[in-house]
Length: 181
Ligand code: S3P
Image 1 (cartoon, protein in one colour):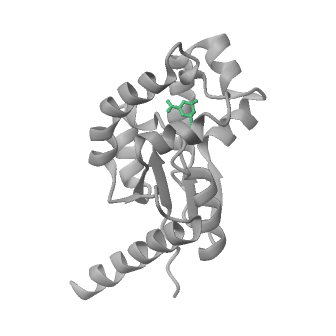
Image 2 (cartoon, rainbow, N blue to C red):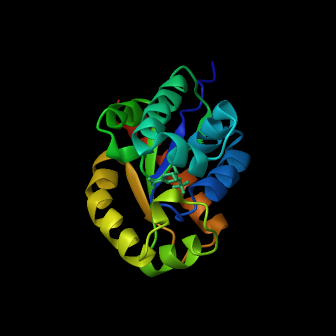
């Protein structure tokens, strides 16, 4: 019997390539791609920035948690998450229980460059987005580190190289588990 593929869950700061890389990993491994932000937008019928504006961040975090929880019954997914998903303690066991958690990293300067290309992200609509990124990264780094099974710095990698690194790590994990039985 072929066992169902485990989920691959991508966590990491805004601009680290979770969605684009997630799509590529899904395509290469025959998994389905889902993005918690996209699910929220589809279910709410409005943009993330609008949800923040109309209901605040705490409301968004509640929906984010229930969206993550709603994926619990599924396997064979690549799940891209929003950058702040690790800030709610109750999401940590949910993430760990639902699959292979990969922390995508990128150097701070590179993140700044990537996120400056669009102004959609509500948390970065501040007077000094560069400092906001730096402060948020300081708070979140230990959270990403604690939740992940594997981390990858994508700063100098192509999407293809990064996807292949994640895939081979995920496959390797099973051979280690089988080998140690
Ligand atoms: C957020 C990241 C965003 C989105 C929301 C909040 C954050 O997702 O969930 O704007 O707190 O870092 P991306 O990481 O996909 O940009």
